[in-house]
Image (cartoon, rainbow, N blue to C red; front, side, top):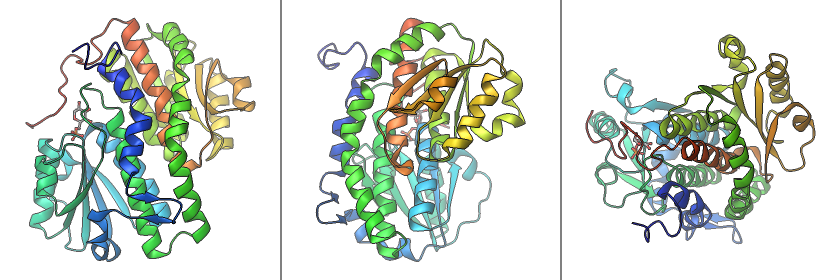
Length: 369
Ligand code: G6P
């Protein structure tokens, strides 16, 4: 097992560090930035299904559901197709409206999650086209789907998903770009710019891994916190959910992710000098809005840990701790902002002496209801 961990203390850390290379593996052969092309075999053969879709319904569980939320923002923005994201376990039992012109995307690392499997069977019964985004080749969900695209994350051993999440976002971003190209919903120059930017993501992820020392320092400070709040807006709202989930899963600290502006409708009541609040505040996106959310936290003495773009000064003045990440466009930022949050939860769990790779009560693959 020590050999399999490749010199890392845990599989989770190894998998966090694999992200630059597995993101590249995931777009290799599909993304041709020099030629201005994205080709995904599972999409090319079924492009009409997507183009004629009344809407896309994404079904997933856990971290994969968070990737689905990111995809909702990206697909709607780039391809202008209406997207709904559903917990597979809710979808399957609520007699949902599914039409034959719907495209259902199932996202699943293992490809074996029982609820996601049941959701796609239901979608197929109603005549929908099912597209699977799975990591495990030949898995049940990949076989049950009409078409799909694999993430090439390689085996993920740590129960808390890391590299599966970022490779899922990579696939779904390419899908959104491919559909945008076919529909003409992005200008030629924007399309091209995103291809080039996607190609730069592995390098930027590598740079974001350099936040490890800062993450350790912050983890040491907050390892005994009983609660933690994660806030983000737009593309980084799902990242806030995922950051909170990672912390809960492996450190057993109660954590909640929230859209930053929604804070005033509840969670703000929890903020006092004991409450760490992780705010994802990159320069692109709703920066001014998030700065005012940070001010609201500060005026209630919350402890602010902010993920900011390199060189940021405004948030730095307000925050107790800042984690600097390289700049990207708003739409691609979840691939970068996620990284320090993975490291933060990892070190908090390590300092609390938790079983990082196999947290209590959790399973890697949930094949029963
Ligand atoms: C379990 C795992 C999570 C995962 C979820 C969905 O809860 O512990 O890490 O996100 O299942 O799994 P899937 O394989 O369908 O992505």
